[in-house]
Length: 316
Ligand code: GDP
Image 1 (cartoon, protein in one colour):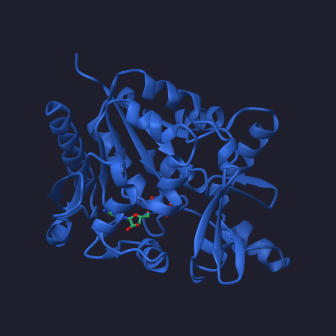
Image 2 (cartoon, rainbow, N blue to C red):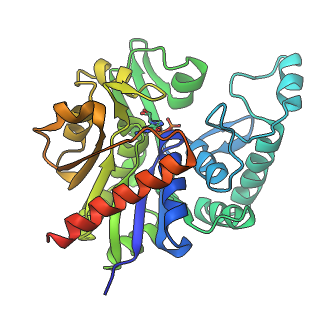
Image 3 (tube, rainbow, N blue to C red):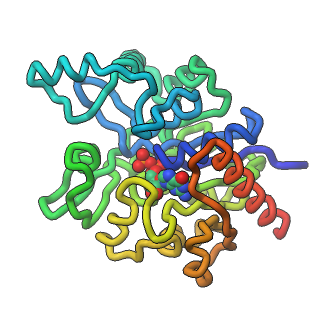
């Protein structure tokens, strides 16, 4: 019988683009998006989950295409007011976006899990696919730069990724368990493909893979694992992926990303611009247009990725 479930590992901006494509070419009950929560933090007394929120807004069609984060048609009265009072305004929270953080925080304080809150909010916003945090346990990405260890959002937003990254750590990851529905899905024998979205390997995908048991569960699912490169022509489309690779002493290239994922990958989708550099990588390579500008680009790349996975499955 045909296997049905597609499990997509995702960070924020790049991951959500492909997740949207997948959500439009798959029936809703066949897609499970695993969101990185290493970027989560507490700010102004609120529990903020940036990658879950980018996925939620994108899949609900209310994302802000100009920024890549936050909601569209946003207003900024809260930010302007808190700034005028001398409060913290380095992490931008729009008025509509703020409502989500306030509501999530309220429910978490009542004892609901992050999965329960996320699932309900997705349902209320009309999202059919499942979006789940990688774990309901707290994991926090930290960055070691020239001035020692700093919190992820301090690095990413407050310091605009300027510090040189020497090392990354995922605090408390050793104590975290894979989210229960994700673990059950991977065990179900019904996984058609595991897709590693074109997200930052170090800060979006590796926190997911670092959860004890996650990498093994992905392998043991028996499904082909196919990644889409976040690097095009040796550069990141957005964000610090290429800069981080250089700072960590790695080759900033599509091939470098594949090398980093190692034997996790069975298939790898790279851009025409990188076709020459990937001859020696381990996974089976598919060359495609992987820059997603339009909705059509997102859907086409989703189909290419699924076709690559299906082809790999049929070779087994
Ligand atoms: P973050 O958590 O918001 O940083 O988002 P992600 O980690 O999911 O995405 C960041 C990565 O997405 C960067 O490495 C970008 O190069 C990549 N990216 C953004 N847009 C595209 C695109 O259209 N195509 C591909 N292949 N990668 C993209």
